[in-house]
Length: 140
Image (cartoon, rainbow, N blue to C red; front, top):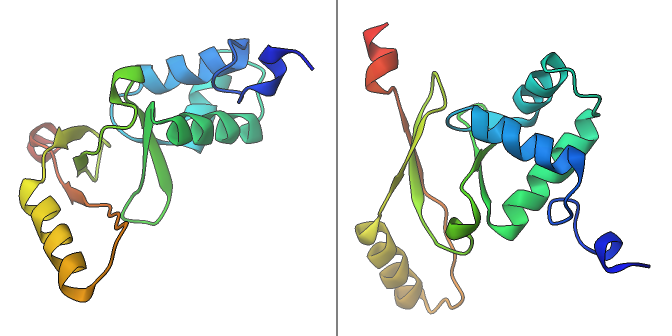
């Protein structure tokens, strides 16, 4: 087995991986795997939906893409790039267009730490996403 075949699909420089990354970058905000798949197919890429899911999940696992559940419970993704890998942050997400703003949540971080300490929990993790309607969508 070569070194390139032992890495995850998103880390290998595959044509399909690059196409998924570029499609995700081209679509502002959070997008579902189906959205990314439809954009790729519309651009003439021959790629399967399961391949799109696999690459998106790999990006999320390595920290180069954020994955959140939208209000309908569907997983959506946004490419953050290598600089975001491992950096904890939260999002303010538009329910209509999927636009997202990265936001700090110092009060949330303190609350999570204090709550965990109060009940004797360790190795605590949390996810906070705030949903609303962005200014552009509100004007429509």
